[in-house]
Image (cartoon, rainbow, N blue to C red; front, top):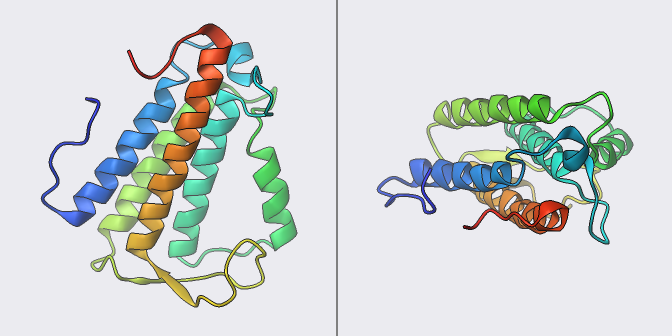
Length: 172
């Protein structure tokens, strides 16, 4: 995949292409790493590359669950998952996390393809402290833009983390 998304003629394809590009940049941070390196937290934060990939996969999957209105776990349980999703557990491999991320990306593309209108309302889950109580719904467009923003933020974190692990970066 080249460094930039090709020209965009269609909004839906453009949003999915930008999300795919950010996933690609995030994945680059893991290229060639051992399991130990993927778990490493070499900066002042607790972020690791494996954890960032795991978190982004879980976050994207969670947002697609929200789009499909399949959220059922209580806020406390989601927060515990949130914290755990930033860590690559000893029984998890980088390959497994990357494979899951691919499956999540395919699911996202399939769900988005099945919704005709990017303005489709996505109800805001109630009783979740990090979601606004005054907003009744986002649009599918908003969710995709949020996923692009979230993935890009964490791709930057992963790039800094990778540079701290062995000097490599996503940019040549």
